[in-house]
Amino acid sequence: MSRTELLQEIRKMRFEEAYAGWQGGHLRQEEAARLLGVCERTFRRYVDRYEEERVDGLIDKRLEQVSHRKAPVVEVMALVDRYRGATPGVEHQTLPRLVQERRWHAQLHLGQEPAARGWRGPEKAPDRGKHRKRREWTAWPGMLLHQDASTHEWVAGAKWDLVVTMDDATNEHYSMRFVEEEGTASSFFGVGDVIEKRGLFAALYTDRGSHYWHTPQAGGNVDKANLTQFARAMARLGIEMIPAYSPQARGRSERTFRTHQGRLPKELRGTGIGDMAEANGYLNEVYLAPFNDEFMQPLIAHAN
Image (cartoon, rainbow, N blue to C red; front, side, top):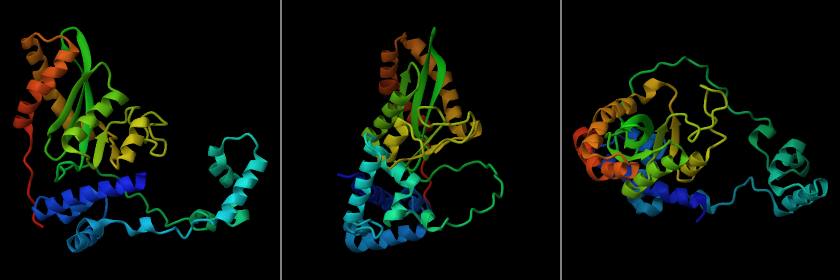
């Protein structure tokens, strides 16, 4: 199955979940559309097609069409022959870059990007300034998850990282795990726990740690074109990644970790646990379910 076909199947599954939430009054059309990454108008079109043809109506007909910008085979072969003759011994992966640098596509009349045809797109709107306000909880589980870690002396004489993956809509903790140091492996473990228990989700909110993002300048914006191993995996699953740009943006995680820091060390000390493997067993077998029972937030039903 190709990546496009995989994302198509994921979109169909997400639509059925969003449709059920909208029909049940838990989601407004705007929220259901955001869960799918589309506008309200597109969501309404999906609803019409779904109610007429069920899941088959959601298949993107463009997957069966040939792009009008696709170059003829003869021109592609001419370009490959020219490349081989001009750059002997160079890896074939460099072909797209050489095509752009030497403008061979212009000489061979191959399909060009809009910018190469003189079109630069719409003008960017002027920046009107930013205003930070308290962010509301998302309306439906799976729309947005948080993943964060806290370094603390969870047992006497040992500092570990506690990696938590939780739902923004309900504050439910899907995964908790102690590790020596958070990183790519612990992030995959957390997401794997979620997918195993609940399935795929729409978006993941994280800090700008190097295992999540490449940040060219310390404290600056992340490089969304140069993805980390973890970010590439999320992209293949169709999970949007959202970086946090201020401590205040992670306030919900910070408050949750203060609760864990106040409770977990006492509970682990009371049971005599000092080993990480035993501590992780305690998290999953004893601590997690009662914590969710106490701190999960109820969903707020919305009118259609």
